[in-house]
Length: 228
Image (cartoon, rainbow, N blue to C red; front, top):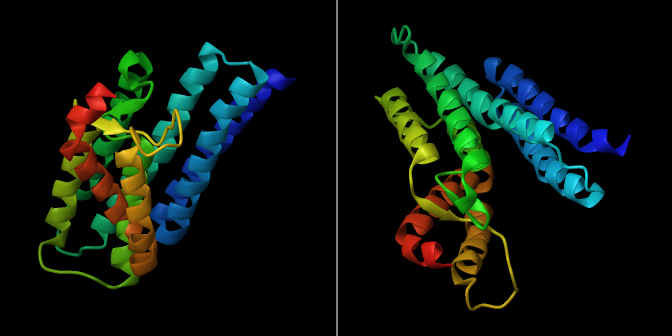
């Protein structure tokens, strides 16, 4: 019985992604983001529970990647698609380009499964971070009625940039600690401490800024990450 518990949690992640996609198509971006976050919580616990119960399996690994692509690939793509559809300027097929992100997310997840270098960090932008960026960004734009001429093209360009970052050979740090001391964890602590004022000032939209800051900090310090 216990061998099914981690896979059940993983399926809850997948279902959360499906629900997020539903709300995305309704242009209810807050609810779409909420279910991405809920999916991320399930994604965090499925691996932990599998290790605790010592019931890790190949099918669990494959199921986890499938669920992640729905929640952190297809759902944010649907959010971007729905947002681009709100621009009534004859974009025609352009909004459908948002779903390229789902394909690149699947590619990133497949690479992660085969890449032994990513035990203590990441190579390329993690899919949950990418999903959180787009969900919080669109929520912030929508809640504040922020718009300008040509915004749809900026969003589309940002989508393509995210696709590149997902599979780029760029080392990015993970919030995993071998010890709690400052030495060797400087980047992680700087990142964590800087997140607090960003969230306080910007609210939900602050998560988009935090993810952008995470990418910038990773790129700026990639040599030290490679040596860690």
